[in-house]
Amino acid sequence: MQGPTLQPMLSYEDVGAAADWLAQAFGFAEVRRFEDGGVVTHCVMSLDEGIFHLGNPGPEYVGPRRHAESCERARRWRETPFVVDGVLAYVDDLDAHFARARAAGATILSEPEEGGAGMQYRVEDVEGHRWMFAARS
Image (tube, rainbow, N blue to C red; front, top):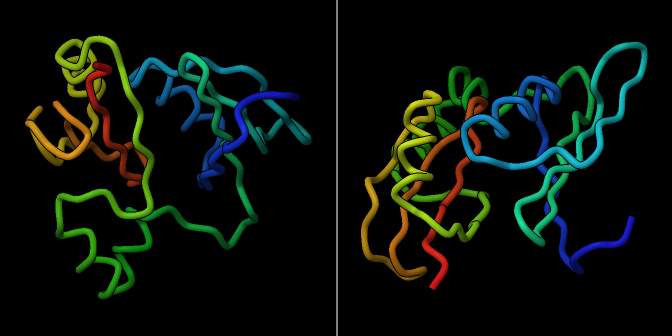
């Protein structure tokens, strides 16, 4: 599969559920889904020309939200509203995107505001990964 030179890879406990939620909440499109024995092991997702991958590295993996439940350090770094090991994505209509994410139950870390990427907001997904969405200028 050809695509952008840089393609982030994010780990999820439940790849299939995460892909479905990311499509609903953030408007990502699923490009390809890989299964093994009926379990989704990998998904390729896109937003316009951007591509990223979801995968599960194994049964011992826990996402950021669950990790913070058992690790004091992880709990503390999650107290900041900033993106920690996350992804920045540009969208055409930031206000509509924000409303969509909120309606899907995303954890809102900041309302739309002016920042380094322009008008932006920060959000956490279903497993606790952090995203920054900014208005395409």
